[in-house]
Length: 231
Image (cartoon, rainbow, N blue to C red; front, side, top):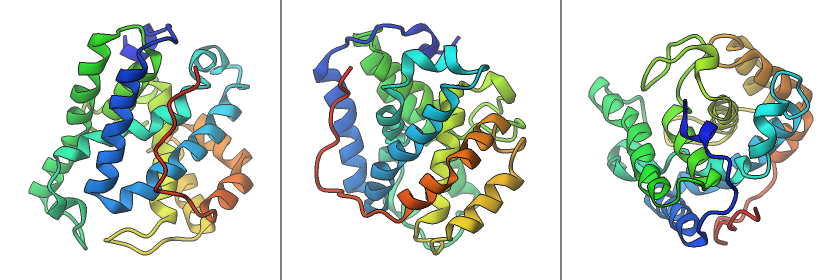
């Protein structure tokens, strides 16, 4: 059972949560492209979470985490603080050796957040972040990393963030690619339904597609600190 599945408490220490968000801020400085990404990701995650919270298969699992999940999604890549800037900013495909190093960010992120979870095991925000950091690159068909988990063995929160993360990566300019428009991103996501992505999450994306498209064009403020969760 994952940490997020066992963490039902909502209190937690403001200090520990701020420490986790300070890691996010540090990542934005370490990799400037990530700054805007971390502002949009919670918006996409909230759209998917709201839609899936009404789904008969997912409403029970999501209700305890509905308010926390969007902001917890920003913790997904804190492990990239351990990845050299030359890899994060490379203009072109990673070599096999570089990709091995990049994949380790999932384990690094989980380790950093687990240190905070150990100090407050009842803090659901930190527990969600630790699960998302570790599992957000797993794929529904088992071809992801770090463990090659398949289907429902991947925590639902990570399956949600996986799609939000990929959508923003597709529709944003990166050192190795231009920004794709929404229609291209939608087509790519639909072709990966049941492969990279959970079909239920893809269905939620398609229902909320107009809001995804609008959000992708909104400017984001990367200067203000991320707020602490209200719950």
